[in-house]
Image (cartoon, rainbow, N blue to C red; front, side):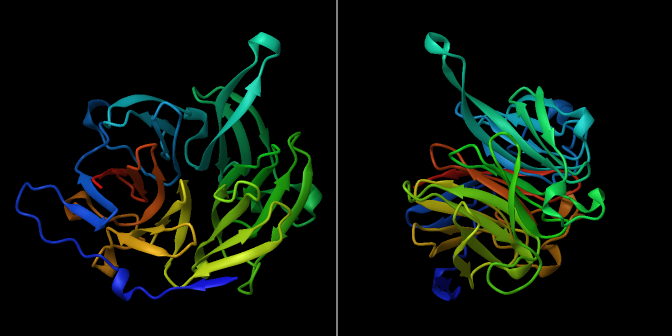
Length: 336
């Protein structure tokens, strides 16, 4: 199944706001208020290069990556800084997802959240507690027979399936998606470089789509092919979403809706049928899109620069990471 949509009628242009009035974005049912200067950093210093992912834990805390010693930073929903960790993982923590696992036995049995992370520079995927205690790591998939040099493996994303299988996207390397079982044993690879259906050019982000509870799917942000591709959990292609995306980086689910972070200056909301609801924060200046070095003086409320990741919280608010050397994290508060 292939879905294509034109942009025309569904594009939303926010009305000009009076000075000091909050900027609002969106369409009826999905209207948001831009929260200026949301992320409060220690001593008011810049976050540093934001070139990673964002996710939300069960307590509503927001996690984000930077390329600094604070490789993982954590904020409350109001933007207050909570903690950071990851000095040993600076310069490459790029993909991040929260998964739930059951630990203990009998009456001591409980469910906890853990982080799975992909590091492009180290060429590895790791599992850690929410406080940064690293449990294990996976290196390059030698059994795949794809890599003659381990340094060519540069993973950008990781997700975990309902059976504990781990899916890793080699977005900055060979453009394959690799599957490991719950014991980290190699299972298969699918994708590979190309433009035809099922092939990929920079599979940058991954998401486990649970909107069809009985048949979860793997969404691949096939960035340089300007599309999303849907696969079953054995790597078989199920569908393609294209025609309304420029350079999709990451995707995140809330109920039946998806938000897509598009590196080329905007984020996009899709409905349960993967049809376009709206674009948000579309930057009117192409010279500011998909560029890392935009100075802070040139930032504008209501306009994104280079959205690299976006996530929802339980209340339907959105949080967006721009790829920017100073570090830019934005909250869009759900209005209605």
